[in-house]
Amino acid sequence: MARAPAKLKDDEPSALVVHAQSHFMPLLPWHRAVWTRLTSRKPNLPHGVLLTGAVGTGKRRFAEHLAGWLLCDTPTVDGACGQCPSCAWLTVGNHPSLLRISREVDAKGKQSRQIKIDQIRDLMLFVQQTGQGWRVVIFEPAETLNTAAANALLKTLEEPAQRVMLLLVADQYLQLPATIRSRVQQIPLGRIETELAVDFVCDELAVTSEQAKLLLAMSGGAPLAAVELSTTTQFKLRGQWLATWLAILTGRRSVLDATTYWLKQLPLLTWLNLVRQILRDVIALQVGYEVIQTDLDQNHLNQIKSRLSMESLLAIDQRIVSLIASQSQNVNPQLVMENLMVQLSR
Ligand SMILES: [Zn+2]
Image (cartoon, rainbow, N blue to C red; front, side, top):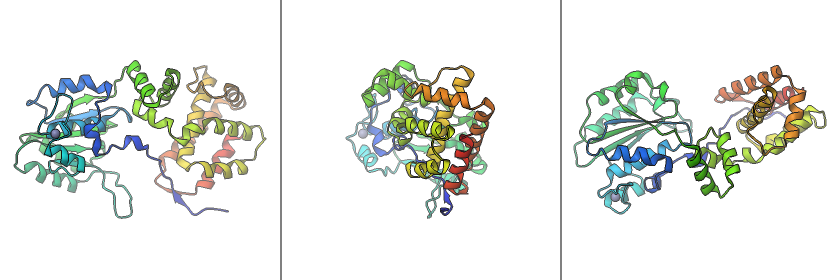
């Protein structure tokens, strides 16, 4: 039976969503050197800062930590004290001198694709207020500023107010206009020594360094993303999906049967990401590269590799990429999954 069209939903990794308490969380080990270099410049701090790095490297957490430290009445070298009246505001989550500008969510729960000019007008009022202490604005994700909003922000960057820090957090900083990038100090937070990253994941998850390396390899080396990945259903069901793929490919299981089963296991978008994750290793085998997911049944991976040509594998990959990109459009999950299963089974 056909389902009503539904929007694809991304299951946003929860650990990457930073809440108010992150002002008081310890500095991440790979942020320590950058932190010391930046904060030792006080009171001559840059007016605009651009924090860059891949998803899962802790940019947002660094921004919140820095905001807490700037606003705190009695900060330590490592951050906010957690005790003063200002820190009490931070704990409650409504500090009057901290403004966060992000993409708005409408009454129906739909998030805008861009940060709009009206939001920058709010910022100008906030920046022009006179008062004691610092005022901090966090833009996230900064690369979603639309052109009008970016131009308005540029004016604020060109005429800096006293004790105001604008913190731009960007996953894809090159998408920001060059005019903005040239007026802020860029701080890359994504360069992380492998050893630090492995130690962090081992400590957080109480896993072996082999397991930590696997999670990191699957997360592009981003430690917070690696920790998050370990808790996802997508990660746990890899072996099972690999077995299903081989079963439909060898005709031991019908596409319809497999579709019915997997529709119940994962949201479509998550399933697409899972298929792609496994597909990457099959492609790696096909071209003679090392497999990332060494914990999976290598015999299964090899059997799939020997049954599908490079051309078919790349066509599947391309199809998944375009399906993921069209996630905002209404689709019928059953139809999409079944069609892709057919392609995966021949
Ligand atoms: Zn404090």
